Length: 109
Image 1: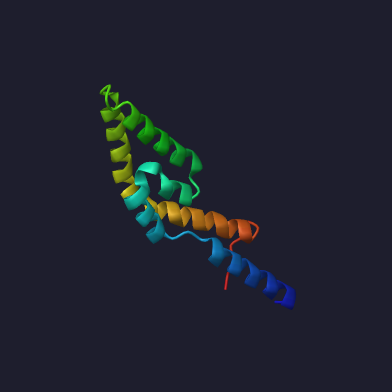
Image 2: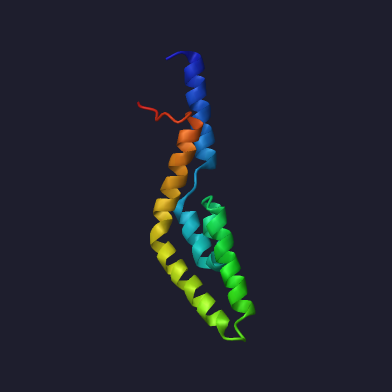
């Protein structure tokens, strides 16, 4: 392996370490800011994070009309399901990141 290749691998590893996502951080976000979809935004799931945020906001706004309880119920079930999905979402994000940094080819030792 040439010095240039080693430098590229080292740079890619540094970028991966700086950008990778932690399931632990995602769980903390889910517990404290789950209704805002913060854990999904953190894990790069912008669309579903925005959907979760909208569902909660609309649920609270329409709570007086009775519709909000249904929307909030859906959001709470979604949050419960996410308790089990977070590790896979973090792993998926990190795999995509690694593939992007290595040009799509997995590195072998």
